[in-house]
Length: 365
Image (tube, rainbow, N blue to C red; front, side, top):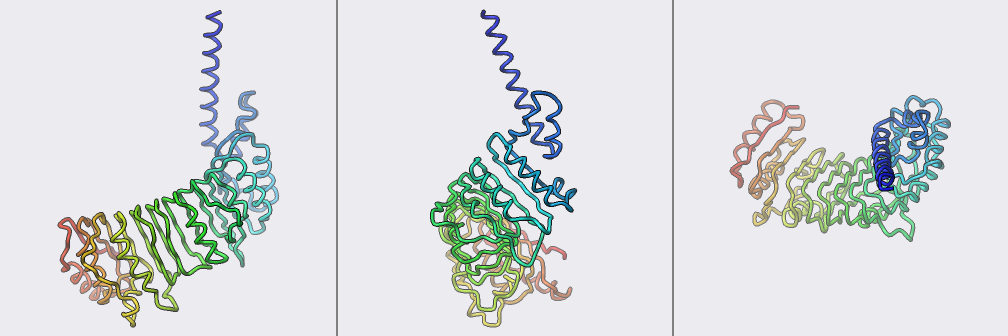
């Protein structure tokens, strides 16, 4: 009897190990090949229907580029026959005629099945952005969200935020109003990484995220405000075009605010942001250079597009003076001739440095 029980336990253990191995193998297979494993044996017959990661990437979509209907039917069949939670869902869309209704149904399904990560890339650029389904706000267990080339409408009144969201990436995006953006960011208190690129619909960006460590903004904005960002360690700001109106004081004071309230280790400025500090009306853009502030954690500064104007040089001088542990200041000029680059480099190299380890490097174009 004891021998029989021992044999049963051993068999159960082996079966469990085999299930784990099957899952690991299936996780690394393209979805179309994973489905074909159902013919291998009884054990494999339905194993792929319990995958927690479903990846309909470019390898899946592009060979079916001419037939969106067929592609859509496959995705729907896989999802609606699935018999376990889907924690990770990825979709790449290269189609010109895809139906947002299908996407809405898929997100609705995912919202009821414990999805934690959603990555949807829409490579078709039409006249208008595609609406992302409001069911996205029902995915209450989301930890990671990446959306490319969509439109976000205001959340429903019963939306209580994404309590577990840590990574948010929105690229080529439209916010239908300011509330869409502020509600999304303000309701994600666990957010650690935020990337916004090429957005429209809001030009007043306010970041209120107590756990945020990494921030990347690349777009057009007229004001920028930081509130409650004590955990921020890395920031990249790129202004795509010169604003029609002067950047507000709230934006330029943001640098001093960052200096006084967070653990910033890396700063990157690029695009037209440097030109903001060297506008004709300097009084509109002038920073409050308070040398009592100290960037006690800043180790790397990268400035792209610097032209050597007095205002830009003053900004670099200020950063060198208050960055007590700085190790690298990297800079790349913006459309300067060799003589002007040399003159600017000499000026930068001559500034006093609060950190004895600080080294300046001029990067070639």
